[in-house]
Length: 107
Image (cartoon, rainbow, N blue to C red; front, side, top):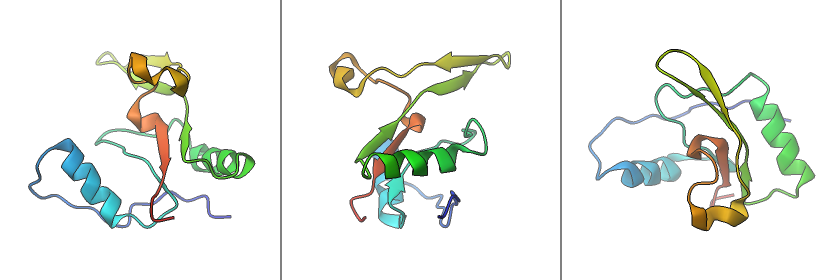
């Protein structure tokens, strides 16, 4: 069981905005799942990859896995952000995009 999350490719080049950059990342990807992390974003602990894999296996490799997130303020306070149900997506983002793991269309 591979529990490693690694960055195999990185790119810094002009693009047409955030979504163009994300699409470039998708094209460069090779794993079963994708997560979009920004500069400075971190996983809550070193068990996140293991937890994601267990959830994927227990749920028959779903297209979307998501969860709660933690924000850190400028004053270094950590704020716990509970995710909402994905069934409420019409109200807006149900969690931070950094807490959403998507099945790759290449998988």
